[in-house]
Picture 1 (cartoon, rainbow, N blue to C red):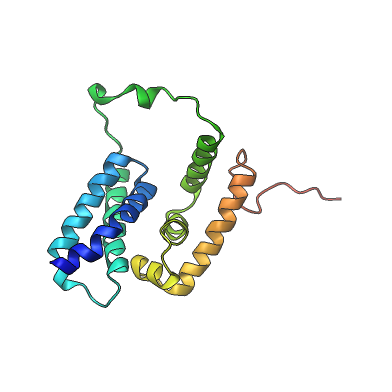
Picture 2: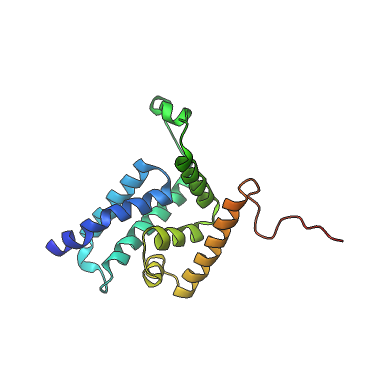
Length: 174
């Protein structure tokens, strides 16, 4: 049990960031993290290999995918009594806040496969092999998705109004 605490406790901030990056809702992300930690504790003896970090991120990722699929089937439900002014009113923010919102919006436009790889490697600092293990895909696929995701993110951030797919811009023909 001590090895569980020593290995998992330092991962919690990174797991929370990844959950929030996937779900875009702090409350749902915290619920997801709690479910993940519960599974980690109950299945700790079943882990394979020495990569407990990748194993824990895999659990979190799979739980998030299940929640996203469930939410897409059900739709989002917010009781009228629970709607706060924060959902209806947006405060003016400074340039950093705007840039952060712009990046988050651009991330939302990426396909889930590219967004997951970008978050795991760029934000959570996982190695390519660890990200491949978390996502249960070959390492070459991780590198390909990362490259395409970075390029697409760059295009979206350079031309946010278009939101068009790469190569779909109009060309002048003489």
